[in-house]
Amino acid sequence: MMMIPVLALMLAPTPPLPLTELQMRDIGCVATMALVVAEMPDLAKPAKRWSGIVGQRVMDESGQPREVVAAAMIESANAQAARGGDGAARQLRIAQCQAIMAAELAATDAASTPLPRPVKSQ
Image (cartoon, rainbow, N blue to C red; front, top):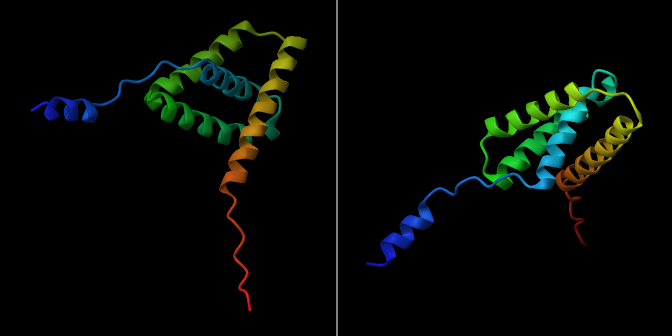
């Protein structure tokens, strides 16, 4: 009889976890890159791809729905836009976020590169 409550707990949906500092950092960087794309159009394609990767990763890790993660990205972009600024701190933030983005895109590309075909021995 004890098996039924344990089984019910195992099948119950897991509640979403709060976002971690790392997830919030990445969401903030996605927002930074979204704001920078107007000034640096060459970053548009990689930034869009990276935002999808970050969004999916955050949803997978936290269990938060897509709408919550998207709202966090929009909120971060709005907060950064309201702060404004053109100084050295902003340039440093952009450089840091570009480095994070480039590293994650490179890791994703490396993970999705197919292995070479095996060579048939004679």
